[in-house]
Image 1 (cartoon, rainbow, N blue to C red):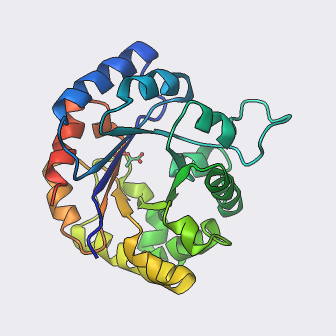
Image 2 (cartoon, helix red, strand yellow; image 1 turned 135 degrees about the vertical axis):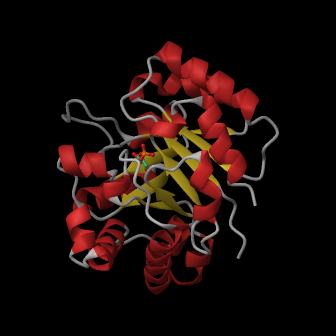
Length: 252
Ligand code: PEP
């Protein structure tokens, strides 16, 4: 099945409002007319509204980097799915390895956030990936399999039509190390097999992104993998020319 390539940039804790607007204005020009790739940028919470306004009517969509599972209440520092919809943003990154590593994110909280996002009409980008020691001890399939099953537990096939999965080996994030195209494809194929087992045929239309030191120069070889449908990009999404190069090289 042909799946539209999907390239998302995760700005992490980078860019002021002014810097984010400058980046997205340059990006808009650089990718004008590209309508065969889904293009998403993920600013910080404070920059989301300005960026969402700036890309209105363009081929660029906006993602938040986290969402809480409750609609409102005494959850200091958190943002609800309804609040994100109000901006409006379309996507939300959930379960990024930095959230897991530094902020106590678990498969259970990933699952709660994912359900809340979907219930509010947001499209989750659910991240999974193994640590270096897990890969070296042969546990990649077990770890990524469990994160996938538990993160997506209880979702429906219809939910999966609006869900994107990102496989990001933790050892490849921000390190300059990239999984080889074969290593990435092997894990993507396993994830798709799990999606098929859990949700049936819709698995064939779910976009599964690779993340971990993606740049323009390695995009095409990664995306040659049959189950690799795009990329979640950190560092290289912070410069319009670099990100545009990835988007251009992701075109079929
Ligand atoms: C990420 O944080 O999602 C990521 C893949 O980062 P980088 O591209 O910088 O490795």
